[in-house]
Image 1 (cartoon, rainbow, N blue to C red):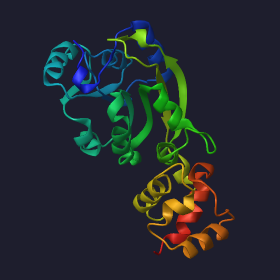
Image 2: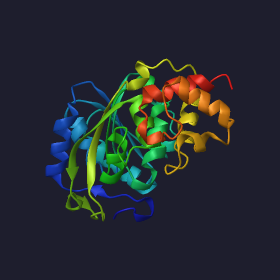
Image 3: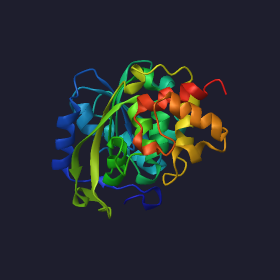
Image 4: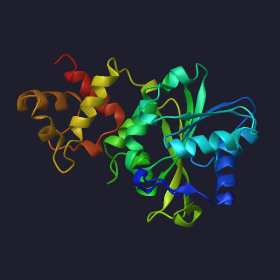
Length: 260
């Protein structure tokens, strides 16, 4: 039975599960953290590939069933927990990779939680709603480019591997899904950002209202004259919008305001 209240759609089609596994490049003795293990649809395949698997499942009944089911699978540990409350560094001190079939309504919070542990994460592979996937990979200048795009691209290099039809899931969602792969690090490796937390907060302010110019979105925090001077220093016009800027431009603009 699907956990509708949790927005979960299980990847029931084995053909699609195998196709996903082939893209993961699982090697023997790899460490994988699985988010939303469900009935073990992917847990078993990861374990069969020789990986050590830490499977997180928030539903107590499913977690208990999965413990019994996974007993003969090899090096698999089942954790009944809310992924948003998990301390990944306490889960394992080793460098790990992530796979997850994420509930659509908490995709962004889960990603933000993962990005708190980027020092230990080699890659992230998630099945999510296609619409969200398009936003994550969108480049500057595209309609879908926004704060989520800059957040993910700051920490990782995201790409859509392939689309997954509703029929691959039980029950079928009303939308098309996609497998997104994120290789770390992202653009943060080449940007000189001293306080990443403040920088991400700055990005949120810049995208506060997409229809407004960048200047108008920042008026709440800085004077019009200060904003105009910073934009000019970065070679930007006063009517520029946030969706037109790449991360390097955002970093340069942030530096102009950093002391304030």
